[in-house]
Image 1 (cartoon, one colour):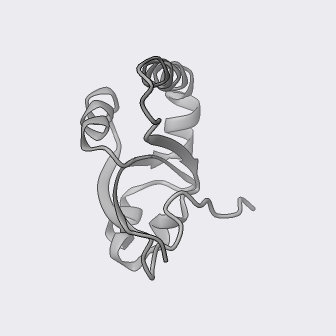
Image 2: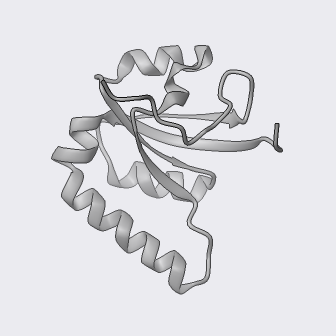
Image 3: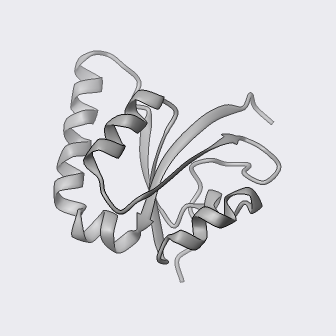
Amino acid sequence: MSESKQYYFVAASRKYLCEDEGKPLGETLAERRRNFEARNLEVNFWLIEQPAFLEAPELASIKKQIPQPAAAIVTTDPNTMRWLKLRLEFVATGEFTAPSTSIPDPLASLAIA
């Protein structure tokens, strides 16, 4: 297993993050990505549909709060997390350490049936 990192996330229904908020959220994330690239910073956030990390036992209480199918924006930076929380309503927030036994790949998605 590689060295563990702390990950922070906002999660909501896929419909909310990718459809209802999708266009403004997509534009906001693209702008943030351009800002990082212009400053030669590594992009530290990812949009994940059906995030596998929500299946971890330690995140069961958060998963119960989120209508399924879910989506999440994951980051390794607490400042990016604060930035996301200021821009999004109706999201669950949390954090986890990965890789771990219960979360081997922090950015993995579940197969969408």
